[in-house]
Image (cartoon, rainbow, N blue to C red):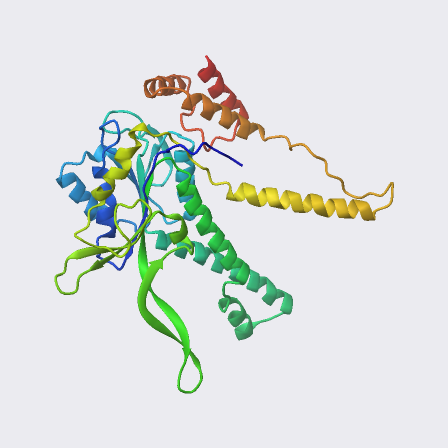
Length: 391
């Protein structure tokens, strides 16, 4: 649980842009690179491209109009878990390193236009629809494995076995997990102390009705919605539906929601510009920062712990004295040594200024020790890294 005084706090953008293809979602979202911070410097923008190259053409437009591309860095992934790794690095203010062609992290820290370690003021996730699709497909493959086990247990062979496995579909618990993953992602984004723009494709809103023979059929309502994780609209502050005017060919945006009050719901923006929302950033100059981290997993764990304790108390009351009933041991389990060392290293590095970090990297290289230690699982090596940091 957290609390705060009801004083003015910094506002940030948390926007969802959705629409069909070629409606300007990516181009509009990349206008985050045109924003100016309260200190007068341009935004540093992280782009996560799940469309695998969908942002490339729009990035060329940024460079053509004078945006310093050293302040824009693009990561390509279609994995929700890899995306969460990036979000954790932002949350923990960790150093970002370049990746090689094989997808391995190198020892080369990413630098911005000022020569400092790159840390984003904003992130654009281009293609949340893809992340939902890959998450759903992963759960579908899990369902096939479940059906394979069932087919083996039932002794099915031939066509019966194939139908059992290939006919696997998402179960209710899979949909619950998918929705949970989506909500957790949004809360992770809300917990970042940076601005966020998400893009998504659109889909028709459908309903069921009876045909003339009394059979249920699915029909379109004529309206559309975003095609992404369920419940995404509850947490974002601003939602724009992008479309192309059929008569003029003009790119337009319909304001579906805007808690920032820059525009009114229902308003149609012709040739929209994201810079309308620069005023939200400008108001932060004399405001305090306050971030609520995503405690969804922690809340679930807390509820589980309480349920387990209640169950144990009931069981204890039913057992006679001297029984072997399980008891609440209390206390925390010992932490993993490697995790402790990494946490201490991270704390030491985060306390350094960018020049100090650069000097420390040189010391580590001279000592033939890793600069990127995320994948290091040798406690002795991590201890030596820590000794250099402390020295």
